[in-house]
Length: 257
Image (tube, rainbow, N blue to C red; front, side, top):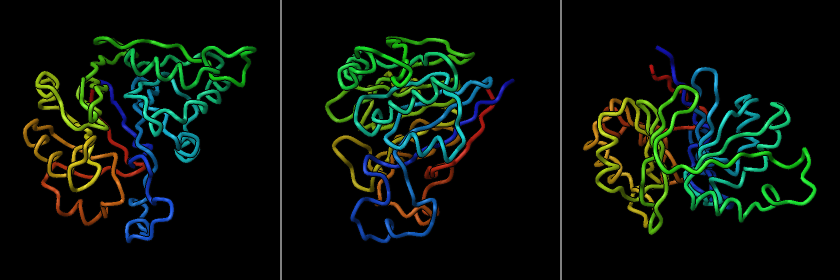
C-alpha cells in the first residue's frame, strides 16, 4: 500500500489572518498556528503533487514549503481567494517543461477562462504565460493512481465542488450538502471541512454546524479549515470533541492508500 500525504499550504479564510488593519488578539498573536494564509492543500501520492486551488498566497506557500513541482490542479470554485494565484503556475511550467492539467466544474472553468483570458486566449503567448490544460469534471475519474470523486456542495446560493480521493475528502467553502453528498462522505479516514467562524455564515459552516456534520459522518479524523480570526488555535483545539482539530499552515497528515 502507498501513502497519501496532505500538506496544508493555507488554512485561512478569504482575508487571511492577520486581517489587514485588525488589532484583535488573534491577529496580534505570536503563535504561528494563528497565522493563516488562504486555504489550499497539496496532495502527494505516488510522487505526484496535486494542488487543490491556486490561492492568492501560492507563491509564498510554494517558497515556504519548497514546492517545486505541480502535476495537476483541482479547483473547487472560482472565488478570488481560491484562484488568484493562478499566474504562479507559470513558474512550475518552466521548471517542468510542460503544461499542467487543471480540473474543475464547467462553471468554474468558464469563469477562470473569462477572468484570465490572457492565459487561454492571449495573443503572442510565450513562456511567461501559464500553460494549462483544462479538464471538465462531470463525474469520477482516475489520476496518478487515485480514484477521484467530485462532491457537490453548497456555498451560499452557489453549487461548487469538494473532492474525495480514496479515504480523504476536502470540503471547503461549504454551507450545506445534498443528501447524496453527505452519504458519500460517511466513515472517511480523513475529512477536511470548512468552519469559518463560531456563528453560522450565509456561505460557510459555523463551528457548531461543522461539528454536527462531523458527528453524523463519523470520519476517523476530522480537520477544520478556512478559518477566520475568530479562532485562537490552541484554545479552540482544547475545547473540540475528540477526533476533531483545527488545521494550521504547514500541518502534514499521512494516510495509507
